[in-house]
Image 1 (cartoon, rainbow, N blue to C red):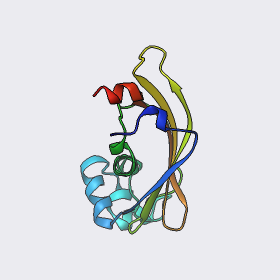
Image 2 (cartoon, rainbow, N blue to C red; image 1 turned 90 degrees about the vertical axis):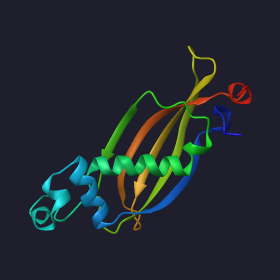
Image 3 (cartoon, rainbow, N blue to C red; image 1 turned 180 degrees about the vertical axis):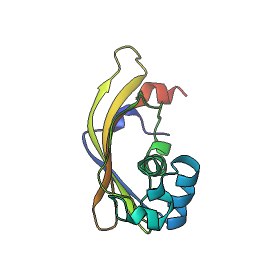
Length: 152
């Protein structure tokens, strides 16, 4: 049975990963979705404020979702999210980075208008292998309440 809203308590939810990012991953994503020079070409990237090839912030967001899905979302009775509250790209994603995702439950609340749903407020930090924070986000996810999960 999938985890229900009532299974979430404030505090550390887990650390997920690692997820390795190669030079080819960065260039492939950028070619398709964010074809700026700092994401495509080492020489052009060396002349930017980033001082070298770096992954797109949108690439980090896609990796964050993959890691969150693999780490915990696939095992819960998720009903999606009403939107991301905040995303900050703190440090560049570099070729060769091994990423970890730390997830903390900030708080929970039952929905006033949807009795089968609760909101789980999460803070997520993506770090590289040296522990440097690359990105953080806050989001509220909607999770089925236990009675609704049991009725499935």
